[in-house]
Image 1: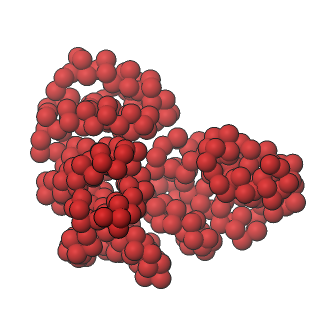
Image 2: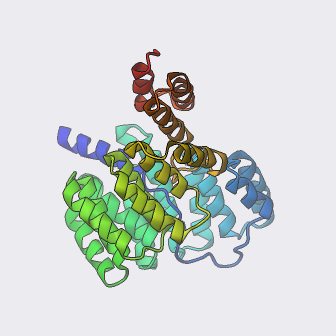
Image 3: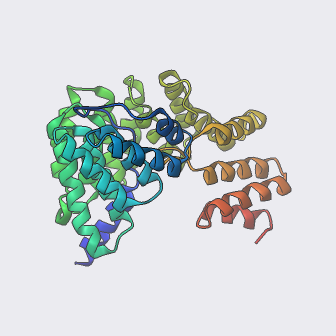
Length: 334
């Protein structure tokens, strides 16, 4: 029983990585979203986006895309019950939408990661069912496929997980998209702490012309946690070619420079630009982490006063940021 609890806890932590931009089938009936709501969402003003979307939903009750964007906005606000409700409404409008089921699964997974163990088990099972449904409806919805594979590689069998279930899903990707295939294989090995194999698969994924910026920058996040400066530069190169306006390339390039203790002025400029332009969104490095890396940059340069300011900014944004607190101790601040 203790082992099952530990496995479930491990999946609940992994579930927080699942939220990313999805593709796949679109809703029937109406698919347009009010521009004011979309702009508010893009500017990370999720409360305003919700207000605009609720008003629009009252006028267009059969517009599933409004409910989908509501789901995403509620997830960013960490209002998971509301996110689940909106996703359910989207599915009621169009039960055949792979994307709607995908996002219901993600909403359930996010709620599970913040719930008690008893409640989390039921939510985890529902997460798995929704991901399975999303893939059944559209096998080329790679975001849903990757979410399903990550779940099965990290979750215990008691909630529907199991690496044996993931293996055929991974193999199916081989003939569909080489980058998605290698990424899925690497992500599964990452869950099992087989980092040598994960490193190889992620390298092959980056070399296989990936089409998803979220896939590329998730590899960047892995490389950052592993302290792999050259892989971070490779990630930034591939990501910026794929999505030139995505600010995440600047973040990962800057952190590579900090790790290598090279080009400090360029690293500082890139991190400041990231803080100025990046949305506050689950799939993007948090602002606290950017401040933490600025702290490391200044610490490398021997500027303890500037490093202290950045580490304090990181802790103010995220009081649980252990790395920033460790940085404050290194520069002599409690």
